Image 1: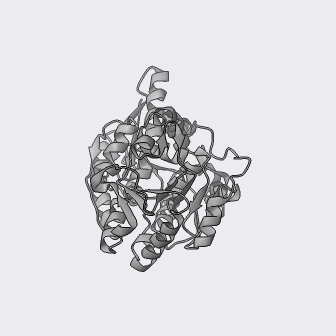
Image 2 (image 1 turned 60 degrees about the horizontal axis):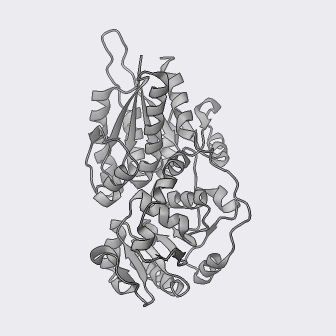
Image 3 (image 1 turned 90 degrees about the vertical axis):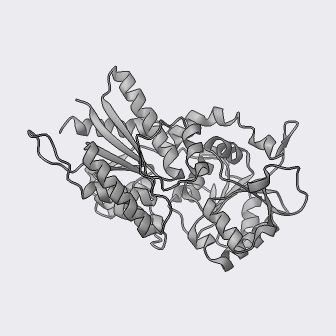
Length: 396
């Protein structure tokens, strides 16, 4: 009997992770010569902008979602409530054996809560049941509960039946929180699966030429910046100081800034447009000799991967981008005072800096470590996830 698994995507970090799960399920069924796993892909619509969603589905060869909830924007509570309401209807109609959620966005929390609070009706010969909940990237902790993502992680882990971890520190965090050992499964990081599968294709991207970062095969040194956390961009005073600091840094090398839509709104609201060369409306243009940050629309996965891979350094406040930089062997400066990806810091490839211009410059000028330990499982994480869930469904 086929197992029915329902996977959830909602925001950019989810797409790369679930892409690996989709591919693993397809290979799992192909190897078996039958559909051992019936897979339903649900897109909550948390990232509703085409640049934040459609591009990723195309780049990652993700199948078209079976269901789209279209929840759109809203406060954390409003968005979470809308996802829960829509996802409950999905659960009652689909009656999955297991629900797979990934990462730490609002859709992750909302679908986890809905799953563990919904009884699905069986056939007349079966009893009603609550689907099992599997959390990919479980156990990560920044130990900063002012971050919405930290709250999402903690709550999701506390109610999950299967906790798929990507690193040893995550295992230890869960054990210290009293999670039974049989629930913890170290599988590695599913983003490695996706990155390895698409690395060659990303190298075909023309983004470096489009932005005039490469000419006649010679690469200009540049830094890649991402910035979107409310703590950094919603406070106008703090955001202005960050931008001013980066303007100084851009004297050392160009800074390329693909901006999240909500970050763009804050740039406009704070009247910071003069700090940027704006490619949002104008598209790429001849190299601007003025010292300004180069503002881009959100990029697809392949273009972003190419930019990150060839950058001198990555500046970010994103957990996922910290990990991508490490996997690509690019030094990272994290614009926070905590991180859930502690191994990247311990290895020396990631430095935490909080609004200290001199520290950022020092981090930019440092040489990367001579070694980069393999931390995240080697590229077969999604296969291991499928093995565990399939084994469970055969015991039902």
